[in-house]
Length: 343
Image (cartoon, rainbow, N blue to C red; front, side, top):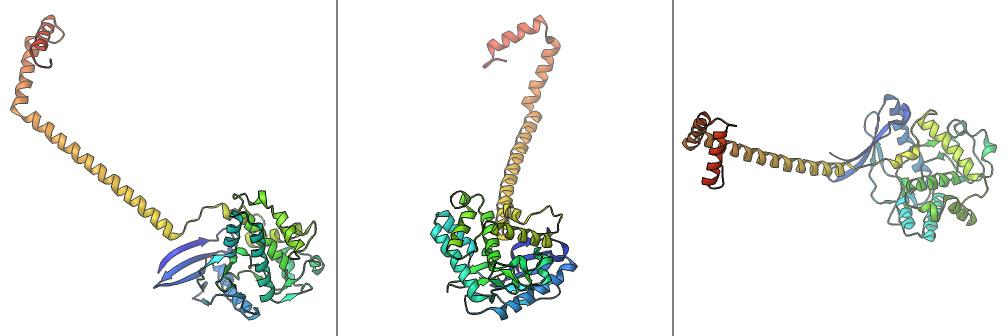
C-alpha cells in the first residue's frame, strides 16, 4: 500500500485523537481513520455508527455517504471520494469576485441539506446540547429553526464533495449528538471556516462575512438579527472546548495557517534533494580527483633529476652567497638580467 496523505489530530483531547490517512492499494484508494490513543478507539467506532445511522436518516439522492467498514480495533476504512469540495467551488467564485455565483452555491448547498435531512420546526432538547454546545435549555434555541435532528455538526462546506449529478457526498460524520442543531448554525460554521481559509485572499474586503450573511438572510436562507452570529460563535466556541479542552493553546482556525503537503509531494521534494546531493557529491569527487592528480604531479616533479639539480644548485648558491648579503644581491641582479623571465 502506498501512503498518499496523512494528518494527525494530536492537538485534540486524548479521547478524540485520530490519524486520517489516504492509501492506494492495487488501484483502489481508501481512507483510514485510526485511533492514536486507547481512549480514541471508542470515538472511531462511534464514527462508524454515526455514518450508518445517518445513512438511514437520509432522504432522496441529493446527499450520499461513502461506504465504511471497521478494520480491527480503532481503525475505520472509508471509501475515497474524488471530486471538488464545496469550499473549493466557493473559492473559485471568490477568486473571480462573483458574489452571485457564491450565493448560488451556498443556496444549492442549503437546499440539499433541507431535502436530505429530517428537519424539525421546534428544538428537540437533550443534555448533549448543554454538554457540547453550551446551551442552557431549549428556550435558548428558540427562533433559530429549522433544526437538524440528530444534532449533526459535520455537513459544512469542506466536508461535502460535489458530485457530477448535482448531488453531494458527505465525507465526514464524526460529530453526531442527540438532540438537535439549528440548520443556520451549520451554515454559520461553514461560512466562518470558509472565510478563515480565505483570510489572505482579500474576500473579506469586497464581500465581508457579515454582508454575505445579510444577503442570505434577505433571501430567506438564514435568520436575521443583530446577535445571531454572536450566538452561533458562542456555540462553536463551546464545541471547540469540548473537542480540544478549555485550556487549549491550539485553535481550530489556526489549522489553515499551517503548511500541509501530501506524501507524494514530499517524496518528490526528497527526490529532488537527493539528486542535488548526488550532483554535489559528484562535484566533490571530481575536485578531489583533480587535487590528487596535481598532488601526484608535484610529487613527480619533486622526485625528478631536474628538480633535484635545481635544489642542489640553490643550496650551493646559499652557501657561496648567503641570503641578505651584498654579494647575494649582486648575483640575484645578474641572474635576473641573464635568465628569461628573471629569477
